[in-house]
Length: 296
Image (cartoon, rainbow, N blue to C red; front, side, top):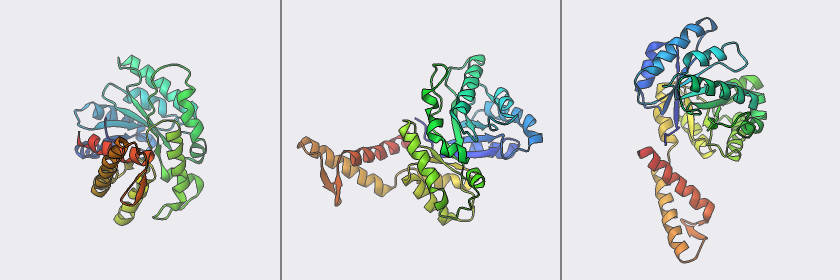
């Protein structure tokens, strides 16, 4: 299984940045047709993005199209989707209807290109007041589909910049103002039996210590990865969303001690002064599994 720690944005209309993005260590690259491309340049950029995603690469390639409510979204999809596109990032999702419409169009394009239905990943960006407020209903789209094909939405992502703008927020470096929205996305994702979400970009490029704290909060808060807007963010992000050496060592102690306890007929023990029962063991095993996944 692929890791989903770092998703690096690159403006689809800047060839040198697209080329560089695919040479870096991000888990996936998102070629952008939305915020980083002026309206007048969007039509021409579609072709550049489609061509870039056809070139050989070693990381997954996504395209961020424009929002479903815009005049650009349909042509963005029709002109960029082909057999070498791994996924679509859909901004400003606010309803299950948004996902149903784009899911249906992607299925039609997959059939047209001879692709397996459901093979193109769809990652919604939740970044408005309506999107966060309705997140439970948005994720119910899986159960309310108008047709029966494989569901392509595996995880959602958070867009703090647009969300803050929509609400008139001015988040500080510790981002306390965004804690509620983040918690809502994590809870709704897991309640819908989806993967843990992907966190918002960090825009304070010179605040490395604050970024490190933000990454720690994010991982502990239930996010599995982060959207990146600068190449220098990839290394810290890739490291932050894997367990530390100390966490791994403790997880190994917990799993080993619990196996011995189970063999004795016990299901509640102490390790390092903490009570350990099944939920703690499951979490420890998940950390070990994540590390094995990263090593493949």
